[in-house]
Image (cartoon, rainbow, N blue to C red; front, side):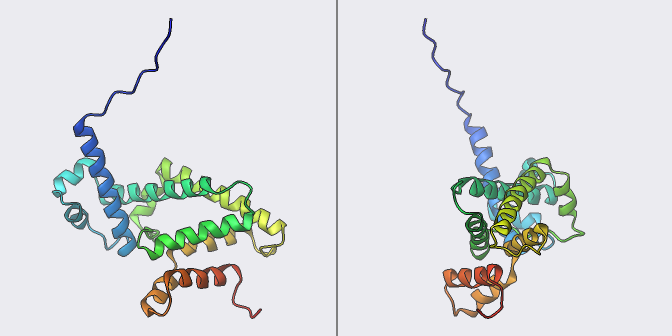
Length: 207
């Protein structure tokens, strides 16, 4: 007797539409967080950008904090997926450079949500969100392991605590230098990335 694998039941049109709307909401929140930051973003702006009533938006997310948290979780998952896509045999320093360049590219494209300030209500929400915290720990562990390898191989200053290097790389995701150079209109995006990558990994000392 042969058995056939059961195909999963097809999602109803309504469920598909709700999922598509939720994706659109998260994308809009992500862009507004990148452009304005959490404090300046309003729920009205999100609803207007998605083209739905504020009451409909609240059926998906019950607060501004929950909206922003969903966008931050989505951003963290993208980071996890990018890290997992890197070749395992790639040198640790090159993996660190790849992740740093990727985050700065998102920042230049206006797609990197800005990190909440220390006293933000969003930060408190994120700290209690398991998906976000698990993602943050996974990303931090991956980067931390590469930092320690690169230090052991003499490619990153061994006198620097690994956590200080980690936070320095995290800071590139919200580096205002990228926007300042772009506003100057003297460099292409690729040139800007090269310049900031050089200052980040090679420092400012004359070579």
